[in-house]
Structures are given as C-alpha cells and as structure tokens.
Length: 118
Image (tube, rainbow, N blue to C red; front, side, top):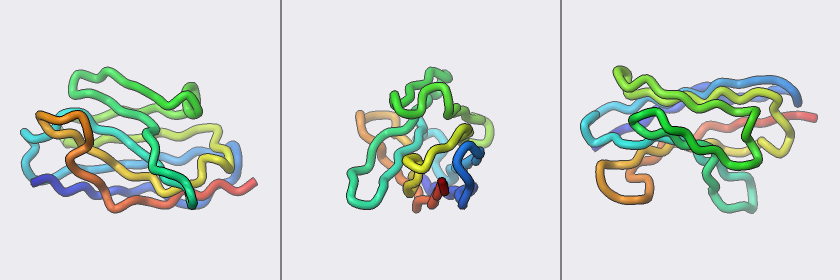
C-alpha cells in the first residue's frame, strides 16, 4: 500500500507561481509513474502532468510551457512547479501514482486547493 501526502497549494495572484509536492510512503517498490491531476468545480478530473520512473514527461496542452513536473526517486516525491498561473488554473490538484501494472493511477492524494485570483 502507498500513502500520498500533498503540500504547497494556496492562493496566488495571476502571473504568480506555486510549487506542489507529493511524498509517497509505504511500498516504494510499487511505484511506477507519478503525476498530477486537477478538478475544478463542475468539471471532471483531468490530467495535468505525468512523469515516468525514467523521467519522461507528458503535459496537458493547457499547461505546456508554464508547468514543470519533476521527481526525486530516492525520496519517492513528485513536484509540480507552476509558473505564470491563470485564474483558469484554479482547481483541487491531486497527486497520482501508478503501480507496476495497470494504465490508471492506483493511488491518489487527498487533494490540495490552488486558487488563482485575477
């Protein structure tokens, strides 16, 4: 079993930056890819960025060039650096971890609120 603890959300003005962190504990050998999703009120949860254990990344088109995902495999921690934030980035951000098998996240964080004011 893997537990995820997120931190770093908050309120920021448009154009500002935030950095999210997600630390995974438990069965570290069960961790494969890691990533971030977000869910705004009235919308579905959508992928923001993912990173494989080897460091390959994938981003939603809406955040390319503004957000950067990274991970520290020794610490089982994934980060999301968010720059040039826009009001439409406001959402609850969820950390996600894939297991060794399966094409969907096996574990989810509790979510952290990001609010961008205009």
